[in-house]
Image (cartoon, rainbow, N blue to C red; front, side, top):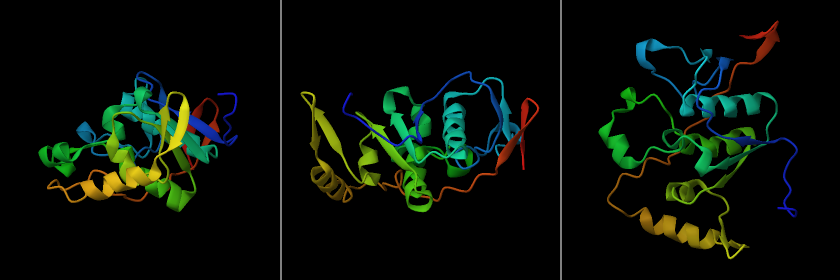
Length: 185
């Protein structure tokens, strides 16, 4: 760790079940909530893992994040990925969460926000990775070419493989603090 460095504008992102959320536009990630609850100005005293993680990303972007640091172990799984089988089982209009894997590419390409992820169980992120490293006996090995080969060979499978297809990250409304509350400009 003593030889690691990153941008001063990098933010650690995680799910925080139960956190308070005030007037945050999480609609890029969360829509179609039960009872038509609005997510363009979302507030709750008790956020779920998914809504808290979406909020943490939006708040980091609001204050100028240029890199997101994400560890799969501290994330809401249903926020990070929705595999092809679940996409076939649950109709898109019934699914309130747009998984991060669908947005991560656009965050970088359209907004210049990098994402560094630690994953050990979600191989679908190889589809959207620019670089892949593996820790082997405390040594960092670049396995990007091997990961690209794996992705290329798996793209010929029978599954539709749309879980990692990229969609755009929508711009978020700016907010300002008024007294002790946020309001959308």
